[in-house]
Image (cartoon, rainbow, N blue to C red; front, side, top):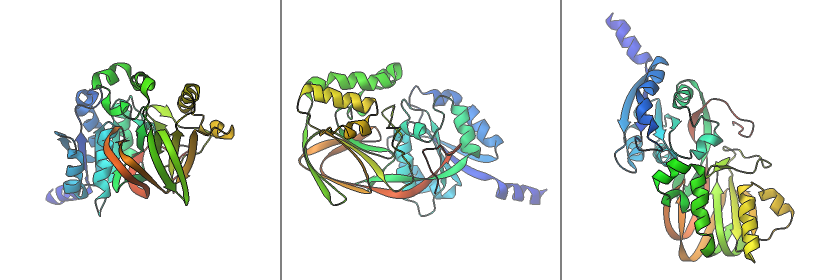
Length: 321
C-alpha cells in the first residue's frame, strides 16, 4: 500500500493555478471550483494562488514556477502578460495554461481559445497541445501580443472597468472617438531593417497577434505567432481630417493591404525582427493593454518561440514549428 501511494505521488502532475479574482466581470471566482474539478479529473494536482497586487503573477512564477509541470493563469491580457514575463526569466520553464477571464482577451482569439466558456478553456489546459510562441521585447521587457502608442492606445488602460464590462469592445471605440477632435501627434524617427522612416505619427503598433483591441488583424496577410517576426502598423499625420478618418476606418476594417496597394502615404504595414523608435519628447506606450511608460527611445524586438502555451488545435493561420 505504501509503495502504491509513493508511485501515485510520482505519477501526479503538479499545476500552479494563479487566479486574478478581479479580472473582467469576476466570473472566474464563481466558476473556480468547477475549473479545479476539470483539472483534477484530468490527473493534475492543483495548487491555487489568488493574486493580491499588480505584478504578483510574475513574482510567483519566478519564485515557484520551476517546481511545477504547468503554470496556469486565469485572468485577462494583463494577467497573461505577467505570466509570460515570469516564465521567460526561468531556466526550466513549465508549460503555460491560459483561462481567459478578462474583458477583451485578445490573445485568446489569436490562439483560438474560448473566451466565454471557462470550463472549456480548463479542458484545453488539462489536455491540449503545447504550442511554442514568440514573445516581444520592449526595451528588454517582455510583452505577449502588442506594444502601441497614439490614438486609441490609452483607451485600453484608461477606460473604467465598469465601462468595459458594460460595453465590451464598444467601450474602446467610444472612448477613442472622444479624443478625435484633438489628435496628438508624435515626431519620430523609426529605424528597421536598414531603413529609416521619419515624420509626425498619430498611431503605431507592433504586434504578434491576430486580434488587437477586440478587432481581428488583416486576414489577407498570414500571421504566424512563432515565425520570429513582429507585425508593424504605423499611421503618419494625415494631410486633412478626411484622410485621418479614412485611415482610422481602414484600421477598423482591417484594410491595411488595400490601403498600401492604393498608395496611401499615411499608413505603413510591414514585418520585422527589430524596430527602434526615437523621439525628442517622451511618448506614452501601452503594452498588452496596460500602461507601459512614457519613453523617448524604444527598442522592440522578438524573442522567437520564447515559451509554450496550451492550445486546443493549431489554426490555419498559425503554423507550429
